[in-house]
Image (tube, rainbow, N blue to C red; front, side, top):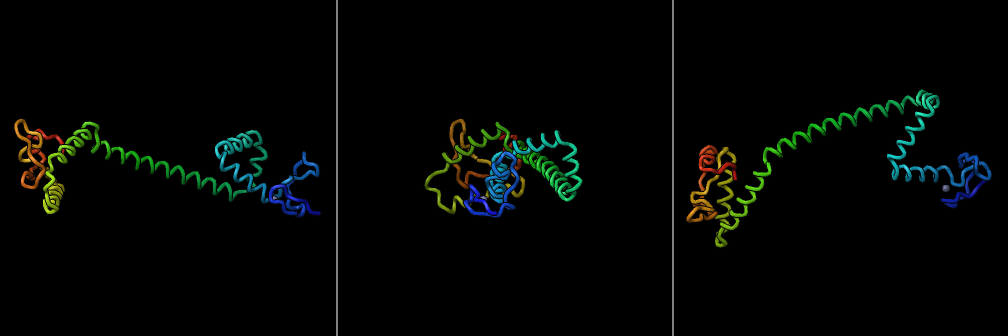
Length: 190
Ligand SMILES: [Zn+2]
């Protein structure tokens, strides 16, 4: 005996249909593979809802659940492994996230961020358009050298001086110690 599946429209043996008491012939109108497909799509869409539904069902059917669990030790083992893995991953992630935040707040406190931004803009404003590529490379090297030796780069004539404003050019840059830079009133590295 065959029956046409309403989904894939294929004629399949009755054994390929699951039981459905309310159906005309006591079978589903869709074949097992199609049912599985539908179920998969439904599950993906309603993962959380589905999880809760299964949990609820398990709570309400403890004997069936226990029996099923006893009969499927491999499944339970996998489930526990997944759970442990997820827990471990979450913990690791939490640590990583904390570390990231710690580093971030160290370098990006709001005040420092705003100041760096201001500095950055004034540096751009103070950078003359006639600087050559070598000049720019020079500037870059000065900053790299300072960074590598734990020093700060200072503008000899400040970019925003009281009377005169310096330029962001190699010959207006000097490498000074962080403490000297802070003494000059520059609280942060540029
Ligand atoms: Zn089908």
